[in-house]
Length: 198
Image (cartoon, rainbow, N blue to C red):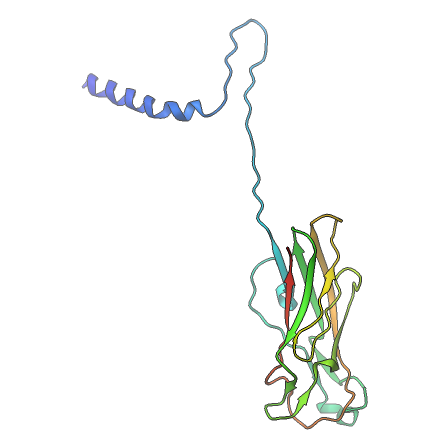
């Protein structure tokens, strides 16, 4: 029985010895002096790029909610084509946040053609624009009529590689032409914003 216990204890010590040896230690037996043991640290940070538009700007997490901006002329039909604002506008002020840690970030907007009402009637994207609350640091890229638009630069936060910018983009509809009735955007009603970073 004692032999078995001694064998188990010896085996446990032998297995633990490499673990004990991996940490630094110093034994001082002199009447004076200090014992020193050092420990190294590492912080590993991945490349991070975040773009949140609308509801997605609320937290730095994945969010699949796609918000809708609506310009409704139902109650002021006489204003159609006059350049006047819609009587009912919802969702036109959109929060935006961009975070990155590896240099200059550019933003682009992409569309797949004019907004349609489900038929051949269209409204060009050039009728819709956005103004940023911080146009010098987080500008809204111009929405192209089709395809990928011209990119805009997000200003680096610290002059190095780091960007953390938030702003509100306020969208407007120019309303420069009389168009056929319908809800435009039932097809081709989505703008896709893309953030790119080295």
